[in-house]
Image (cartoon, rainbow, N blue to C red; front, side, top):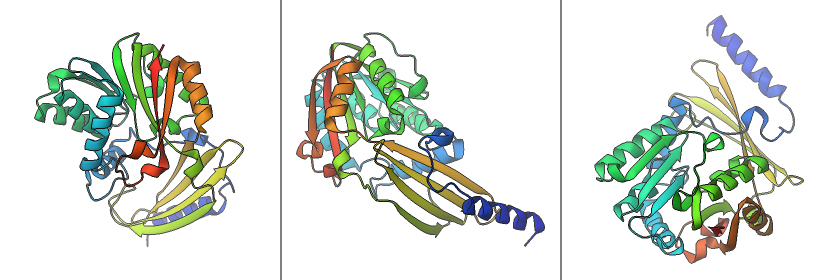
Length: 292
């Protein structure tokens, strides 16, 4: 073991030892490094892995969702759909194949590159506008889209104030009467216990060489926020990454009110994905709201 490696390892272990007992929500951003090229590439690999639905839902589940979305959003060929946080473009491509024009936005460079390839491979490139950008900094157009989707709980990684601004931006970007589908975790189902766990691996979201993952989860009841802190010790180098992930949860009444304040009306909330056959359907609330 080199002296440099030993020093790095010692420093990492002391950082763990001296870590704050309970991290503050959104400290150092409080989000995954979506736009980091290496992390983005590894996350894309998880999106494409059909053995699980932890990053993107499996194909059969997405097909059921797309049929539901087509009906609930009253989509028609020629409509313009806004896919907010589109990931690798699975929903974008399927909606474009049905005749929609789609504007798709995501922060991940690998996901955006895949979405562009997918659009080309499915013959829908002319119908898709694909943008790499943080939606927290997006310049929302006015009255452009017939419908919008913001799926798989992605709004939860933003603070309440940021989420309110994003919802207002989406409302502004929709034509009057345009519909939004928003998917968020059911606050009643969220794990509210503090916990910790660890594991080792040599391939996964955190790296492609041996690493030690030390995870902690904290529930902050006063803010209804779940905070996860990950220390990732890369065993070949002694380097350590510290990542904080925050998930803001909402009661149905609170989110309904936030949507109305943002410029939506006729807000409907569907528990358990309205009965769709998804493996984790009971964990989610799906909102459909209409732009004023």
